[in-house]
Length: 457
Image (cartoon, rainbow, N blue to C red; front, top):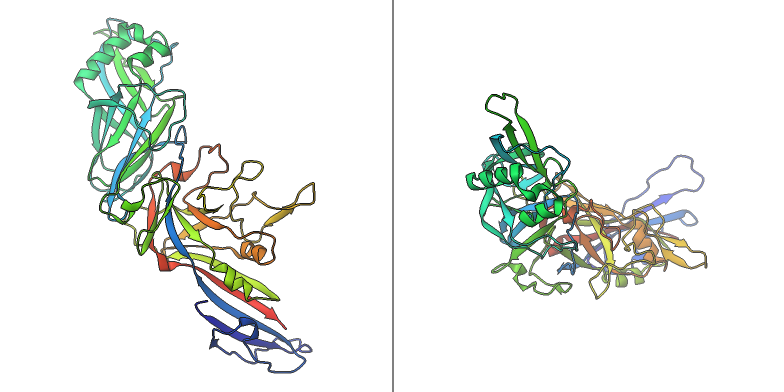
């Protein structure tokens, strides 16, 4: 144990008004159950103790990380000293409504723009222009699951491109310029081509798009795939017609995924090669969403500490991570972390219902009795380790979880810190860890359990 501090409060049994008789602070490596002095025989005496437990940590690259139709695509290029260069590319099919009226062969093009529905922004220097481009895929998106390490081939030349300055705006629809060659080609196909007779022919002609960002911008956006991410074609029917018409090609009901490429050369995370294996990265550890890099916490220091205790009650056990390395302005860390239970496989451990076991919220039941009278861990109330931007650290109470281990209701497991929440192997949408590249880095010696407990004699 690192340190132990005890103070003793004496409460006379017959007094209605509580009086504080003494406050004694000591530091000792002796048995905490024996720390304290008896101030008055036959009085009720409560000893309150504080313990700080260092937890060692390493990093793990998630074994499999499905990003298919998870709410948005991740587009951006980020560079830093710990994670290296990380690039997110968004891939999506396009959709046409075959019942929609198409412009006639005499129709005249007014304009064509490519809209991107920006639903989140995370980056530095957001008062400076950021560049995005859209490229035509040269291979189709199949009806299969795609993972964050997947990628597809696309044309080098962009079919749409442009710069945008976000400033304080975090959700907006931006407009990109469509290249002249593609504009002319596409409008001709819309008017007369068999490619727009049905969705299958259309996707043979235009298999989909890849959305990319620019090196050096150090900014990542989440792009929603819906009616707002689209090619908007404005035209009028004849020279004499002054009313503009609209024909849309959008991403409604379209299959999409995010592909993440990582070059960690020359960084502490360069050693991370195999997925699902834990690695030491020197004096720091880090978590990065999108990439799938998590922090593994070794909880074994709990064992020798709990073995010293008898007849105690945990007042408070707080998991504290940080202060974390100061984030770059505009680049926000994940707002909350889930704590998944793991073992030497470094995988989430599923329950009988396939829901993964997590540390449950403080004050909530940690176990339940099934129909066969077996005591099993609960999975219904996972805790969230929340980020405090003022203190620049993550913290959450885990008193109930540690108490359940101490009482023998739970078997101690190591923890995987995950920057979102996925309820099961089905990995439904709405998981922030699959929707961004948010990150943080922290010194290993700043991951601790801070324990306050009482012993009643």
